[in-house]
Length: 121
Image 1 (cartoon, helix red, strand yellow):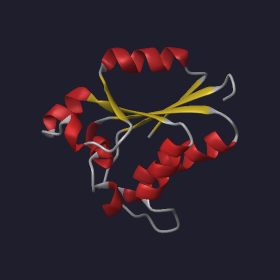
Image 2: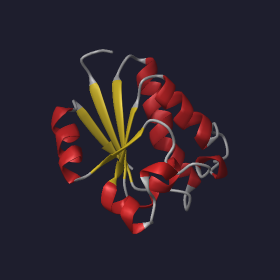
Image 3: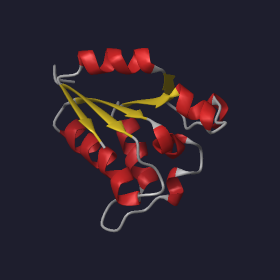
Image 4: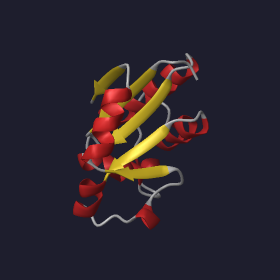
């Protein structure tokens, strides 16, 4: 990876498929340019990392959400999920897709401070 690091924060899940897929479209495009990418999901976006949920999200004109996340992870992307947001939805670590990590506010602050750029959705 290059010395560039991009942090993408997303708060949108299944309720808006187009807005939900955009962070992962940007993430995989950035990875193709050798940018290190971290995605941090908050609010309803955490549902995208629950096993079986990404398959339900499709936005016209874009790859399916599950394929985008799979590609992001295969290309070395790091995926964090907001721990209070998971707790609010009764989602445990056993419910999550492989490779997803749980983080709290401190984790997010560390990622923000170490990133060259931050994008929010």
